Length: 275
Image 1: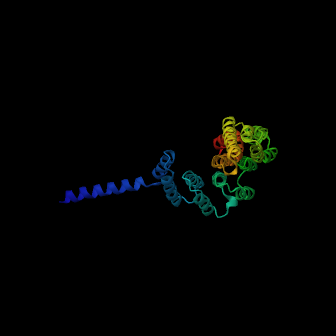
Image 2: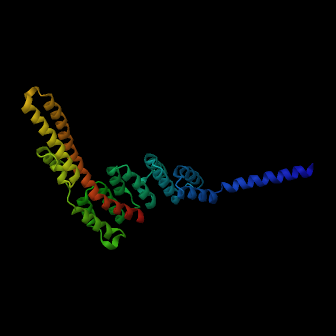
Image 3: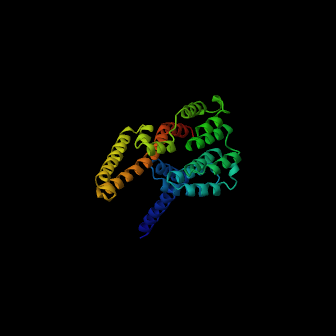
């Protein structure tokens, strides 16, 4: 009986020590990192919250936690948690400040982002310039981005030369005016599409609107204003005509977005490679 009780005591002691070991700081950190690397960001968030409870002054853990909130798509939670972890965000550490900035940029809250960069004392001035330029690039304002980057020397920041080259290249890309595209297609259907280099849809628009107009006029010439054929083709043609105008405006906007997308992708890759 005594041997049985002793064996039971040893087993319980072992299980208890094993359980405690599983939840110690080192193992919990390894598990959180595993969850992060495997893309289980929401679960990783919970682990990092527990780690911060163990070591509330560890800034590296705070940065990782903000990153997990962002990666899991919980931007509002990331920003709220950032303010909770750093009640005075002016002294938020640089790595955490960059993560906080990422969430602001993803939320397109550029005004708050600018105010944050201006007040934070831990971000370096070159980093603030790069972040500000990134904000303008995300808004497709490459002229403003160039002005911001003009004060930055190539040796001041690892991204300076590449950022300036890409922003300068983007300024030279000619944008298409959605208003002009719409006006052109109003006057001559399909020409707004030609203006945006959308040749196929331009030809289709011109053909269908022209064909419907021709059939409508033919019907009215043959039977007068009471021509059913004339009214049907006229109504259909008018619908195509309005769609052709709207499509030209959309095409111009799409052209502008597509022409700058490669620049934005390269900027995004540079940004993520550094921060």
